[in-house]
Length: 478
Image (cartoon, rainbow, N blue to C red; front, top):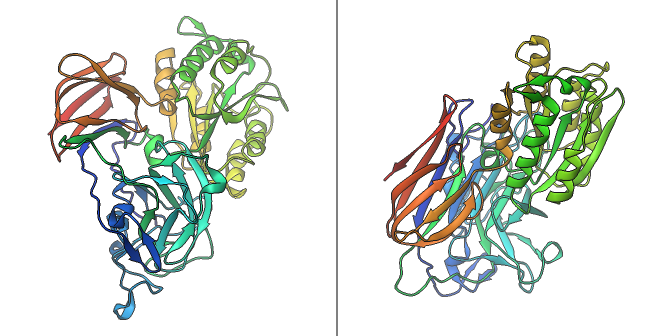
């Protein structure tokens, strides 16, 4: 069975977002040494907040609390010794995968009162109690991650120098299990006790209370929080049926309009690829997976013309090559108005992406397929074969909503005088705000305005954004 996810889940088909306001102060202390490693800033060096956690299979309840990975190392294994190899309830297990179709366990933490930077020697230390290796990735914004290798030990050391630029600082660390033979211990996979960074402490303005504001998705449609890909590929059906008319225009023209809008709304540092398929044995790689080059890609999309049959399996097999040099996790957004018509098996092609060792999901949008039960069922099975999600879209607006899963909503924060103090997107790093009263405008359709949002000293304010019956609604929770 799969372990619990730290993130709360909403009903299927709903988008749930949480605006979290957390006031915090940088705490500075004397240097401290833990198992041979001296941290100049003492306990400030260790991770402060759990952003996300998903346990893979077979993690026992006593070892699935992600909060145990925060703060300095405190594991005491069998017999009471510190730092020895074994399971400990003061650590959190990531679990292991029973098969390639199972979820990979992961933990995402944030440094609030310090940052991770490149210093002389090792920069990041992960205290793993049970000798199982973990994949380590770091991020500046909690959205785009850099793979910095694997580590194991109590502590395991990582030097980030080969992977980052001079002067760059990082606040987020994501640890994932390394699939191996079945592990039926009580804490399978890496058991994480603490995560420490050698970067400098961050000090707020003296005498002023600050809160940290972030808009984070936590629902079934919110892959950016629950499943944060390093990169994604858009696979667009350009077969002849995409020239049919729906909702006042051809399906291909509607898709081009919605996709160009999507590209405008993606974060600047997104890693995106684009491939079309139309005609047996034919699939065009419009853009390789890489840093988003918005305007050239939009021009290519607007020039697309429909024609031919629907080779979904062929396109998916080529996507395996497209992702070959791209770090995990990965995401494919497949948009099609029909089923495979070139003799391939797209469900098997989807499974082969996992069999290739990729950590990958495929989200599928069925565009105007409600009347074609066979096509709709095949598209659903493609999504389900990788643990992805399926969406129906019968109009341009429904297509826009479905594709918004890869373009987190923008939001703007105004102070009491009406001055704009921050603009961001769901899942990206938020600002630090002085305690006070704010107005938050969320860029849904239509926009939602929340007045009198209070940020209090050392408190948490939640704004829940929910989609129901085709509309969005938001509620502030004190």
